[in-house]
Length: 190
Image 1 (cartoon, rainbow, N blue to C red):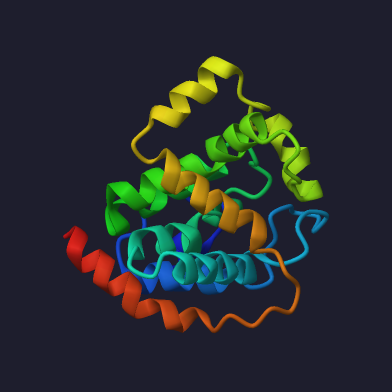
Image 2 (cartoon, rainbow, N blue to C red):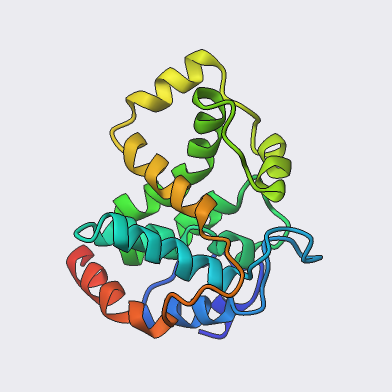
């Protein structure tokens, strides 16, 4: 497990214990190496995003877990704004399955899509900055193609929770609260 908790690793996460270790390592880790990005660390952001999804979609455990793990790529490859979603998706796929992985991968295209279909939508300063590095606002053809993806609606829901889950000091529980949900989904994926 020691290798998996170090930044820069590309090894898939294979156990709930290993994933929990990574999630705990997110405390004090930020979306930007110089801490100039979002106002909460990756740990609090993960908890807030998952909590919002639990409240809005209580039966969809995979969507909730996608919210919990969607930004692990920032921990695994600090500074890789363009590739962090793909990094996280690859890391969690063996343990949490194809749908969670795909939702994680789609949370960046969902931002680009929302920027196209809701141009007046406000992004955090960091999200607005990284939008350019992640391909910018989708054009009409790309947005239409994204909208036809079977997971597009869920990816947009994840993105909206991602955008809202950046509140300093918000108490939404502790990381260990998510262990049973991770165990249920991991067992189902086996």
